[in-house]
Image (cartoon, rainbow, N blue to C red; front, top):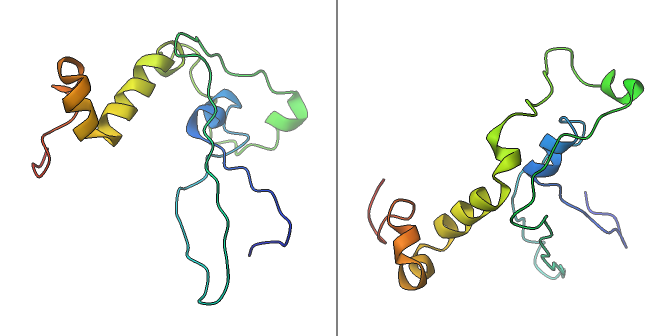
Length: 119
């Protein structure tokens, strides 16, 4: 339930991995307000530089103890940390296939299928 005057911050997958899943990524969804009510939403995406190499943040023992025992911390050697820029580019190309085909056709060939096609 929304709180009047609240400032909501949605956490992404990179932050979830970096905090060893202490903070969990928000499932993206949009719920329209009831008729007659207003909703103001301003999206702002902030991330590290594309050449950044990320590493999990060491959690203090008391925070680590709050995580489910079945959850293993992310592998610090996972390539998603070292290839942040590459993964971000893949995401952009897949999210905007028409733009990718027009301006980055050499990069988009393997990532973004032509509009209307199934992959």
